[in-house]
Each structure stands twice: as structure tokens, then as C-alpha cells.
Length: 308
Image (cartoon, rainbow, N blue to C red):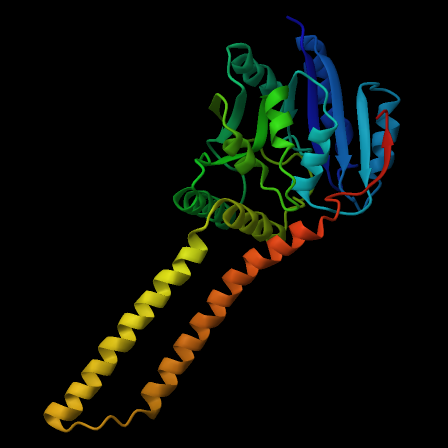
């Protein structure tokens, strides 16, 4: 059966190699004979990425271009693209050719076999050693903390059937963690191992700050463990205080030991003051997210579009 294919690509400062991206997609389109719509979402690029999308749309008439009014972040850009996808099969890939379009027929094959989602599981990463350690640690920490079974080492690279995307878009979160939402909605899913290519050109738009934000979005959106940790820390602190108090009283009554405790008192106050601030910070993260949701601001502003 001939199915319409939608490919969503978030774009950020990609004008220098966007032609290579389109050539790779068009090559696979012709080889696989896709009925294709390609949704390119310019996430507030600082270069002329949107002008490049306009230029390419004259050659590749299946392009849908969306320019956001500012940089809203990768996850919002992807969500915006998904909301405009009309295909039966919908794919998400990055703009830097690290998720090559040539892998898509293999992934779509799993949807033909009855799966609703086929997501990429990275066997090898081409990032720096510190980034690889950070990614590995984050995914394992999130999996251990979350009530949702979020697959290890899986990114946003995936293909999905239309009804899966429709259910994902029911989530109105202002700080979405899409791979967590993808796991939460369920349906029949399979992980497909692949070796991720090196970035084609330029530097990743994912700064340490942005990576930390996505990590926090994942943890605070799909885990209540941080709040429970506060309770555990409170119990540990109470036990410590009771034991210490009993030992001081016993030492005074039984042996006449008088505790000259300014250094001890200073250490205890410093320790528990720091602990209180950390606990307030964790609670504050949840409160800020609640505040963001109840303000009900739009999660994105679209400045202009092409063929939409």
C-alpha cells in the first residue's frame, strides 16, 4: 500500500549544509518512491536558514517551511513540526545528517510489519568522551527514577504511525520531553540499533545549558523521585538528630561530659542549611513547571510559513 510519508526536521543555523540534507532526502525519496512532505522548522536560526528553506522550496516542492519567531528549543521545534504533519508514517530526523535518511526504509519496514513506533537506539556515538559519559549517565539515571519505561540510549530519531503522533500531541506541556511522551503513550514499539554518523558540518546547537534543560525536563516531567528524596533526607536528618541528642545527654548524665560544641554546631547548621536549600530548589522546580502550565501561554509563536 502506498503511504504518505512526513519527515520532520528541526533546523538551527544549518544554511551551510541544508542542500546536502535535501539531496540525501531526495535521493532516498526517489529510490523508495515516497509520496513525501518534508517539514523544515527553523527554530530561530541566527544565520539565513529560513531564506535557504525558501530557496530550496522552489526546487523541492514537497517542502513545508515553518519559521518560529525566536529560538524556542529543539523539543518545541519538533513538536511544532509534528503538529503540521499529515502523513501516514511520520519520521523525526536531525538536520546534521547524523540520522541519515537512508536508514528510514528499514525503520518504515517495522511499521509495515505491525509496529506503531520504531525508534533508534545508538550503538556508538561520535561525541566527545565527556558527552558520551554524560548521555549514558543521564539515560540510566532517568530510567531508574522514572515510572515510565523510557528506553536507554534512544533519541528523537524515530518513525511513528499517525495515530501515535495524534496522541502525543494531546500533551499540552510547555516543556515537553518528547522521547518520554513517546514511551508514555504506549502502543507497539521496537528499538532499532544503528550507528550514528558524525555531524556533517558545523557545531551542535546543543550547548551544555540546553542539554541540562532537556535532562531536567525529562527528570521532572517523568519522575516524582526528587520529591520523595526530600522525605528520605528529612527522615535521615531526624534520625541523626535524635541519635546525636541521646548520645550527648547520655554522655553528660553518665560521665559528666560537657560538649563544647561551637565547631560542631557550626558544621551541623551549615550542613542542614545547605540541605534545606537543595530541597527548596527541588520543590521550586516543580512549582515553576506548574506555574508555566497554569499561565497557559502558547508554547510556540510561528512567524511565517511556506506551503503550509
